[in-house]
Length: 282
Length: 282
Image (tube, rainbow over all chains, first blue to last red; front, side, top):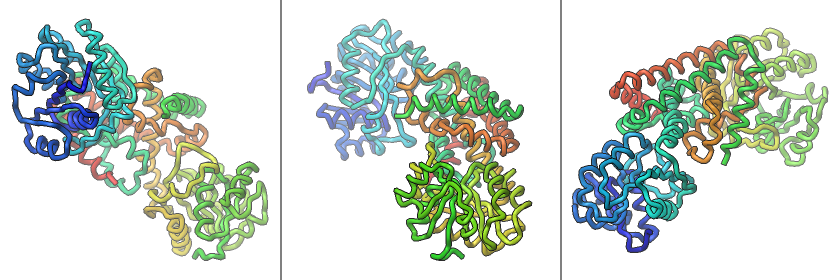
């Protein structure tokens, strides 16, 4: 159970870590942060996003009740492996990685028996990074996904659900690692692969003055952090390749309607996409 | 020159025709409309979008100084061929078709010598249709493209530019039919083909609760009028097939980086897409 005495520790004050801190502190919780960049700590302290911050402080780690590791996926695994010896017995640890293969099992395999790691994924973001863009309202229309394994307790699941509610997530659900990564391979990784590829199709920059909202909407997420996203793509490589193959088969299907002058076939594709998209209207 | 005495006639009170009428009338011009659906006329009259409307009125046609044919592309050709005998000598005729191959030349080939047809494309729209969604503010961030041929006069070009200014278009430019259709094949038709194909990739409707803004942005235009867009796609078939081939080659290029574990190669794609996309930020 999270109470007003719960001490939160955020590891990594980036966009997501900073937004967690902001939302928790706004709701009256005590939030500390460890972040390698002193400027980010200074900014967060000055703007009331955290109560206390440090570039390195083992006491903070050993006093925290809930630790949110808000680093890149591989670095999250390394950080927990390195510092778990300092965790307070009974502490609840979570992460924010957008891909779970290669993250959840390695951590569950090595985590101490007297603390609990329960993975989660806040499906929110922006095309910018850093604590100066922290904004807890990005969670208000977003999904919070919890990934329990056989090592997790109902109590930890309830606590993470409670934290997600405090942060104002729109929807909270539970998925297995496999189902999560298949889902995210489609709704997020494939969409980013498409946006990047569309942006890279030919040298289209001379078309700036002619592009309207459609092109801008489809390429918004082509502005992408190459270090984070290359890591994410490779961690979910098998799912992503399958989704790319399914998608390009569908594009080829549409092209074949054009080649064969199949007007009715093309209309059927439009009717199907329209019917499906209506289900996604908010 | 357009003056306050200029009589505008809109053929077809759909979303675009209705928005033209609304914008022109707001600015004090006399606007009439011919529209087969009496309910649309009643709505437009009741809401002050037009001064006068009819389902069929040859006098309206013969009194108009500027006629905007706001029908589907093929229908626009047919309408002008059928009714040009009633046009007032000196009248300026334009259209709103989003594809110009198969539209501009057929009309220029048959248009009467004592009237002038000058094609144009208002690059604006919504995922809804009909006069009840008419909204001239959709033009305020949009491009207005004029497609002069050797048959057009500077005076007509100036008049259409003036009309586009009255309607508040953000940018007004001139292109040849070939350049226009190559450009629109990329920025509009390819983007719609991608959105439709992504929406049709597998049965993804069970993922509704997990989709965030990225997926919604990429599929917004997958809600599509199958009759209009199948006509548009086939009129621009050659350009669209070329763009689809270039795009799928780029997707395959990204996939090959994954298959060959080429981390640096994938990062380069992200760096390129990010640099290009920044040029498109408004």
